[in-house]
Image (tube, rainbow, N blue to C red; front, side, top):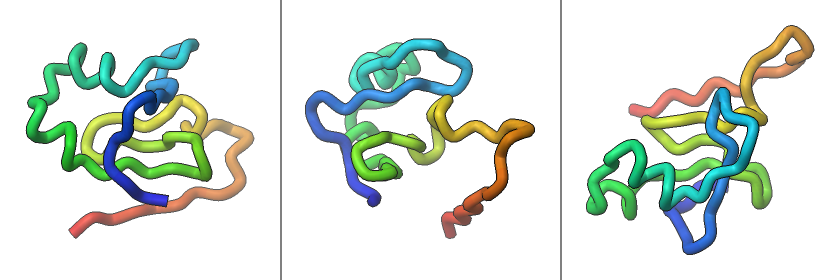
Length: 75
């Protein structure tokens, strides 16, 4: 599922041990407000996996136990 942000979206950025609200992530990373509303967000059901061009979720990092990888190429 791909969509833009909605109020209350949150995820666990790569390398972090706790969830973070997407709004707070954008503020901390100084993502311009105009860009925030247009960024594609990639979900697995309700779980945010990737903020396009910025950050993957810690839950989808590749580890020694990874058996499948989805490669997405934006053109």
